[in-house]
Image 1: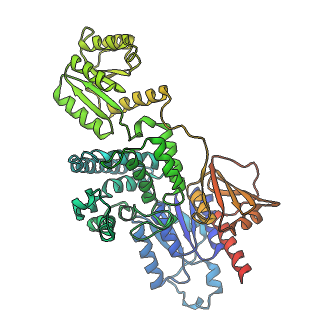
Image 2: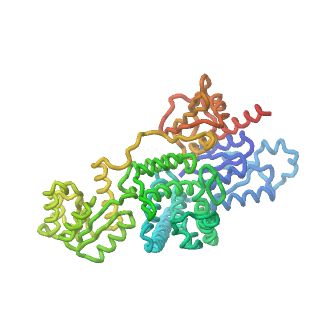
Length: 561
């Protein structure tokens, strides 16, 4: 895996020199002009190494190193001093035999992790350990939610969608773990809030609102004594921040908000809007997405909104939370019936379980489910008869129908498929596999009916006063995005092309290249549209994106002086 290196230096030339060496060695550099900016980067992006340039390796520099190490545990923070700084420094004579100068390539080579490629058993063990932890927390949270008919299974469904968004971005595995674990634990602070206050439907006064809002920082405080290998506490504390800075508890804005918190904020809002409440009906997928898209750049991160929409388009049946897909389960085994019912409810389905084919037929006539699962043990069983009766009825002949077999039987499977079943599921198989195949049946059915999210293909749009060009550049650079950014300001328009996170071309009126970029960097108001996947055939810009931004700021400072 390529090393992810954050380079921190006030000198743009030093940053670019080190970044070039990192890229030549196959690494991924991210640039920061100071320690504050580096901290914001580390809160969002996992890094293997931080190169922190300092004039002198003294107490102040070591404090800065400790500060960054606390933000991202496990990341190596290395203090370096460039020869350019030494040569021009009046403190040159302070360096002695304990100080050394080495070439940039040797520096990066000495920081490469050793033995990671060969020691895979420990990594596999860590992966299994995290999965066990996550499943345990999932069960415990699910048990807490069982007593609430409105939130039963909601954390599980929310976490599943959060993971899908994180994978779609895509994020490194350690950051995915950070987000999904924080998602399950995000509301633990509600244990400190009066339950009656959380359940009231009446309008709340100022003090009551503040009491409810306290659950986010309270959750972080409840867990702060635990040394997590993942940076989950900032995500828990800040999952109610808003992209425009109007959220709580700290009023963070834009990329100051941890990426995991930005993901949870968008997905949590979608799931909440699609879930029924005593005081309102649930929105459907289209209505909820329209509302979220209207808040992109204000309440939500525009890129996360776009990724959520893409995930929903791929599997509408899996994430439609308003009107739950209905499933009828017919099985004589009460224990298996109960386990399957609990798992399907946890995954967001409306489930009716019965023991006989006659009871199944009554349930089908009552609810017209999206799927019927019926136990089968031989060709002459009641399940075959139920299937034949449904296929004769025009109202139910296209209803998805799957058999649940006690064990694998090739002959029975072939006969069942010839009778027109949509799938043949074996109860002895892994339950996760069974649930995934059930989800696939429902996804195919939604596609056949033309259901799901039908949207015009367009990019994320927003206002420059909410998301400025420097923030757009950093977002696309960190994500290694290929995209076209269209900007407008008064009667002026311009375009900037990105390739794998690098700015490669810009055009504004008659200007091209860096001059065009610097011109658009002055626009503080106007609109932007980001269209991902659009490539430029021209390359007029070759410098580092963040260097380009810093140079624009320098030019603006000179112009205003």
